[in-house]
Image 1 (cartoon, rainbow, N blue to C red):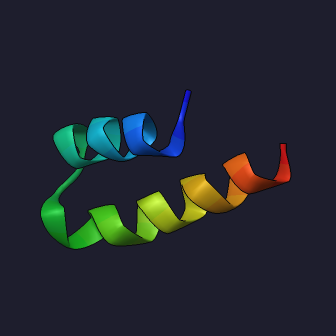
Image 2: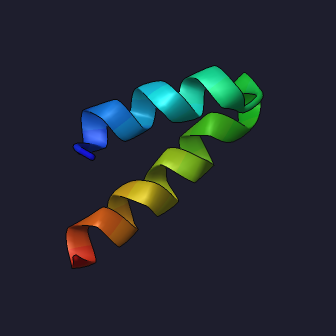
Image 3: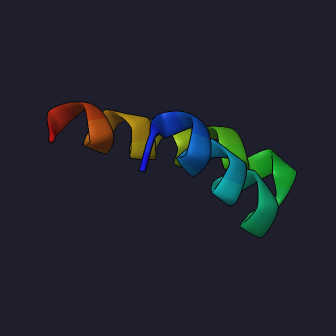
Length: 33
């Protein structure tokens, strides 16, 4: 899954105020793969 796709999913399933933090965590994890 590309980071842009992950971001779209996260924005869809999480409260807006929490999404930025979760996106940062996901992109950090994706960057390590």
